Amino acid sequence: MLEKHGVACDLMHGFHWDKWTTGKPTERLALIPAGQEHILEQEDGKKRWVQVVTGLSRAFALCAASDEATEIRDDVSCFQALQAALGKHSTNHRKTPEQIDAAIRQPV
Image (cartoon, rainbow, N blue to C red; front, top):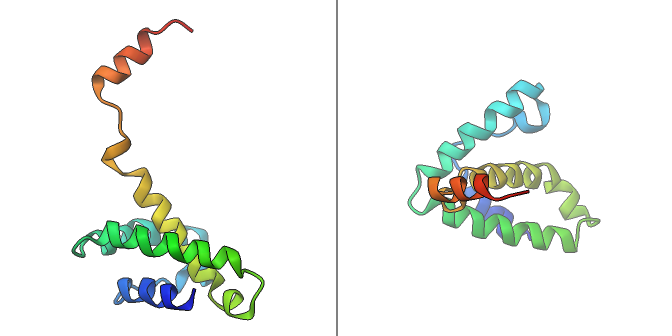
């Protein structure tokens, strides 16, 4: 778990996410698009981010009650929020205009 956390922190090098826990709600929300941009600027950033955060989330879930997990809990929540936001903007899951038209025409 700590190894994957370290890799995620390395991917976020140069980006300060300390406002995730100390900032106002608007400051926290502003971190998400900025964090997405930081990840996407890196070579294979999205792919690497998804792999690392998925592994980190699984490891974290297995030992969430440990002292080590408690120490990185806020980081993990920030990383998961960034991963979710990146997933929402994926073009792989968008419907084509033809699929949308077909869905509208189907009887309910």
